[in-house]
Length: 301
Image (cartoon, rainbow, N blue to C red; front, top):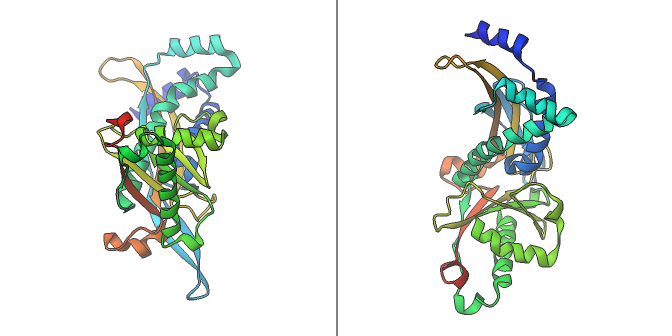
């Protein structure tokens, strides 16, 4: 199988891998929540080491924490034939790789962000549910959005790591909560209007808001929040890219040539969080979450 795959990759592939993977990476940087909010620490092997750092006032020293991280494979099987790829090349010319990347990146982004949001929700400290009385808020949904934003900011300020955190925060919200915040954002700024990420709402008071498109819309409206990375070590989460490959091989059942995109990467909560989380016996110093009860508001009933 390996020899057969190698022959296909060398003789039959019409894809310039560096061009395609470069195009995909450019899109992922803008559209994946995990990539946008995390510190980025690349992996040099299938198992790598990530680190976090903060100034410890009690000891007067820089505290360093490290952890192992494993690359996880995410495979996107396409239905492209060789002829279809050649047709795309003929039609789009120099833009071929940008077009092909957009076909592939939506599913990749969903898989990456689904894993990311599962990870942060499992680790986040739970805050009290935020509820709204219809009598008070039905005629002032803007105030409800402001209340959610204030609760997020208070949660960030209350994190045990707050005095050492990056100045920016992030929050991922359900679609219902996003609809409330949209009015707040439009009234305060238009920062998100030129952003081509479908999940990005915009920024309120130093917090970037994203819509959780993996949310099942099952009646539970949730918010999870954390600290945005400064690029290296101060964010709530770390994203580590390892490798990506465009693979063409033969389907053993049909004998047809098939094409895959294989992405290998890892992600983790900042290893400094272990000091406060204490294997589940403490609370997260980097992540928080709360539910929002919208059942009394007419628009959501």
